[in-house]
Image 1 (tube, rainbow, N blue to C red):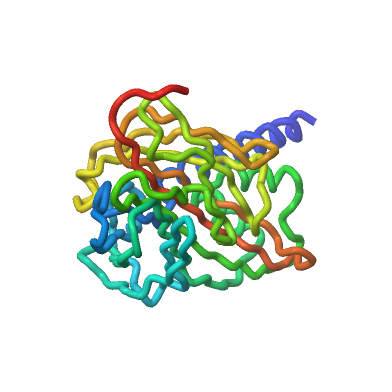
Image 2: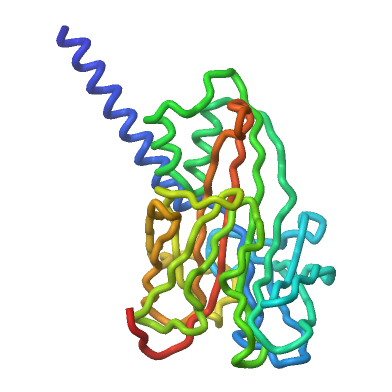
Length: 294
């Protein structure tokens, strides 16, 4: 009897240690794809340049995403939606160039090509945890949502957005829903937000708000965009918020500069419990100096 109790305690301890390891490792192993404007504001008539940054240290890039990996690239204004075809590699970054038709606010969006792989339910759970959603992985385990089959088909894809300003006082486009399979949509205009304020974002999965999902928000210096990823120096801790019943979470803006919001969400396809979608979504915006309200 005592042996059985010790065994159960040991199992609980080991399980807790594994969960803690996954949460810790997720911070270190998550590999994101961000779109970062190459300037805070672009002059009317000039080409908009946006960098595709791949890595774990925002806003730097550890290596380039190749143009062939891009399934779709668009620049969307208040009343325009144009495909971006000028894609190249610049150093360690993917470079996107486009010349909007006029002044205004635009959303640049990229969808990377989806990849299919076979995995066991245990490997699926570990992948979700290590790539940025340890809380979701643990919740699915507790709820018994992972399939009982020996293997599952895992479809993974990354979706990224950023907001750029061309000229000043143009038509706003920040809250346009672009139809990405996993999409972060700001409900407040970041251009009108200052340090001390906040930005609300809604998470959509196939167009529907998703509650109880952890979002991570981080800050970056515009001066670091083209720098080498720092070594040795610890990164600033992320701000972690959870979406409500309406899929909305509030990001507190503590300082001016570049901000990213990112998340991973996974679910079985409707009517296909052995085929899982694992999607990544990031959004980048810039915040000017000064102090704002709540």
